Image (cartoon, rainbow, N blue to C red; front, side, top):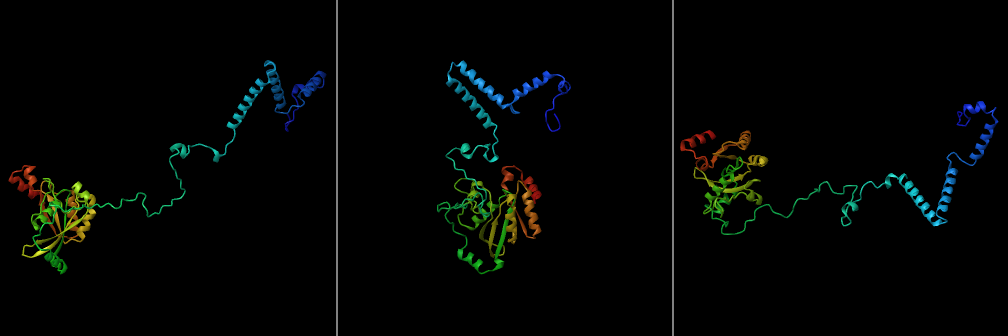
Length: 322
């Protein structure tokens, strides 16, 4: 072949082509045989196909229907092969299952390209219409108890605006150190026949726990205020607003907020457990804000009933706690 792809012949043909006349005759015969064929040899394939059809007809004894069915089956196979090898556009490819195939016909699926929900609207809306405060129904157990003072006297102390007769006190301390029980004792001291326990023995009333979850769990979660008229040491009564604060360290922000509006701090310390991390946290905050602190030792009965300490050891225990 030359540089343009034309057939020139091999070296032997160039050497002996001029001398051997038989070669020219053979080349002429080859050219006659090759006439009518293109480079792909399609006509040769067609003749072979026709010859195959004639052989099939001869074998079938003239039954043209059998050969036609076989040829139709071969044509169908060729069509299937061409369909499998065909180029499919990307938008027409079926690579994944549709929503109806995955979830079934009874499930409605919605696809949004843009978020139509407002940013101020939460994804999961909170429950509405449910109260978290305990509903106290009138009964013989929780009926209003008569006070040791009149309601008019307590109202006059507040309405007159005498600042010297009003005190705001935050009751703080570690978890389960008796803050709510201390307020229950003050409520019982200022009310006639006010019980400290419910109908079940050993279950405190917990007057300051007004939430349903607080009553169920036996722990204060939010701040609650109880106003009482308490007598002073000089024969003068004061309106004391006691703020019952939660003792868990996760709710320390409620305790700090109550200290900002309080005139003093009532620090409850368990006599058996002593000073713990929550006690130190509240004490540091009170000292930093320069708020007067009064320490109250609670649960003294644990030293005798649980620890079973003799009187001398009880004295040393209380002294070490203080």
